[in-house]
Image (cartoon, rainbow, N blue to C red; front, side, top):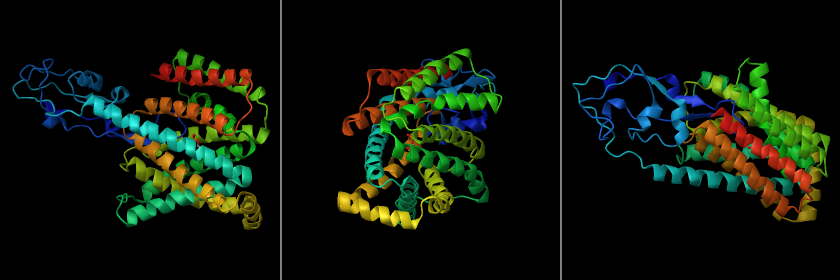
Length: 397
Ligand code: 3PG
């Protein structure tokens, strides 16, 4: 009978696959409708005749109008089910969540995420141009986010998560990878155009597949490997034709890619079975990353350089420089928070497509705002790499 349907643990909480999203890292949780309370109104499913095969996928349940949200959600679920007891009434949800409302919600998340990310990238680059201390600006972003969340918890604007030592232990490798990925991306953006960093960062799926294949022994369908050709080829073409190429900038983006792949792996492994919301998960991640990064930032740059650079930046830009720093810090936290909240609503695969779209928004807007010189062949490389990430998403699906 329906109440006996078993739920795979992964159906309650799971984490991003080794997806290309970078920020897709993390985890997502989709609460399932308790099947015992499900009512059947569908012509496809008569209350007296319903019987389930021993193993059913939610893709079949979706056809019954269970309202699981986005199309990709179902691909993540499988439930082992016992034969339905035909003698009992089985009813579908009286009011399934309308698909249109869910789509609208996801659309709003995506639009907010991209907009916040574009604003972050612009202010981040403006700050780095005037104040080239990426270790400090990375630290400030994490500090600002941590402070915002501590205040939210203290004032009960947001409910504080219930965590234990195991949670923090499993978060540690995620935070190490997040810290490396974040600081490496910021160092990259301090050396090259924002657009170039994001073009190289669109190559993250290639790192994901290579790490999974050679370090974890996972295999993928041939189309997944084939999709890496345009990704790697496009990034390579964009790199060799970049007018303001800088090796540190290039390597920073590459290291960020690698670190975010490991962040995804550790998220997936370490957080399985935990139930902290996307927003709070990212808040905890920020706090731990802040603790990890601060001593390194002091060692690499240090207060003396920061103070001298601050005076120079203030004298060149004026007091609005402080607002730029505040904006890059606040928007960094907000875009990451919204991206983690999106993960609660969509599959990692949908997330990765969204992340690629985000990069297009960032690349185009930063080229316009910073008047970045770009050759047609360079733009072609970027377009090929981004097309490759779409093909990768499709191939993985
Ligand atoms: C960072 O500073 O962490 C990077 O800008 C992150 O980039 P992403 O979220 O676009 O991968």
